Length: 132
Image (cartoon, rainbow, N blue to C red; front, side):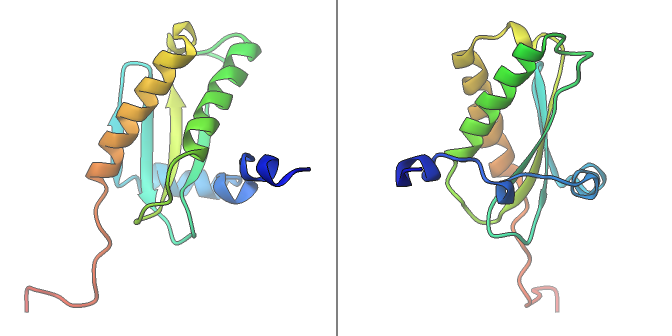
C-alpha cells in the first residue's frame, strides 16, 4: 500500500466503535447542530483527534446502497477536517429524505453543520478560576 493510500484511510482511532462511546455522546452531548436531514451531537473527548459515529437507520434510508453512500460521504468529509482543539466525539444521525440529496448537497450540509457545531462547542476550562 502506498503512503498516499495510507493517508486517505479512515482509521479505527477516528471512529466511535463501542456502545459505551455512543452512549457517552448521547448522554452528555454538549452541543448539537440540527438540520432538516441530519443531527450532529458532540461532546468533548480526551483523545488525540475528533472521532465520528454514524447512526443511519434503515427506517429513514431504505436502500443499503444509499446508506453506504451517506457513510462514505460523511467519513470523507470528516477525514479531511483539521484536528483543531478541543477534540470531540461526534455522532451523526440521519433523518428522512437525506437519501434524496446528491453528494454535493450532502457535503454542503455537513460543512454548514460542522461550522455551527465547532463554533458552539464550549472551550475546556482552565485550572484557574476567575470567580475567586
